[in-house]
Image 1 (cartoon, rainbow, N blue to C red):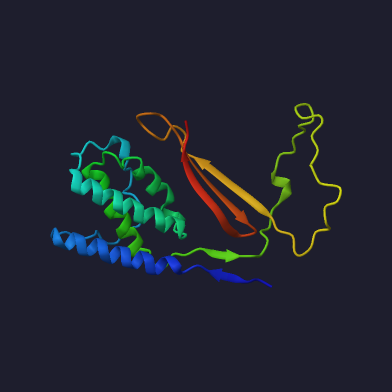
Image 2: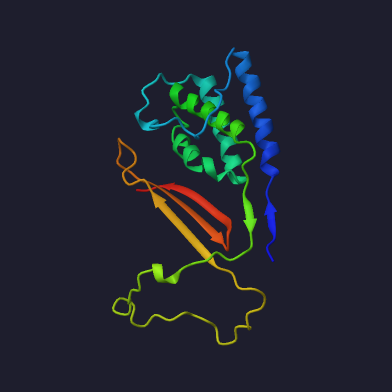
Length: 199
């Protein structure tokens, strides 16, 4: 029997964050864009942005908004994780275009306010025939799984851990560095996710 837990804690946080951003924008006679379908604008590359750099006040605002978005990722909005990581690289000297993309991301969150993580404890169906069988004994001839001799017998239901990794090979158009995303599932529930710029 399947138990599904839905994390909704982030909805209240994100709703309040969007309200605050809209209030701040209204003071500047601006609004969030509408009907946004992606976290970043299509084909936008933050490293190629040559718009004017922000002054100190707007830089502080940018840093604050990135912090809010980072916390939204921690609360489960993994759909914006890569976009936040890409824009967080410019905390020291952000540009006007970077700030516009942050507003774009808040508009995306507003449009997709009902997104949430579903924690599903059922086991995924994995076809073991899809994996290539490799013999590593030449490289690791003495390798053994270190199971203590006095280990207790397993209890409860078994679980399946899955890890998915993807990278945008040489995605940064200036440095040619890649950005890697990793997500780990316990059965069908995502439990760990992170994004990292490669050396």
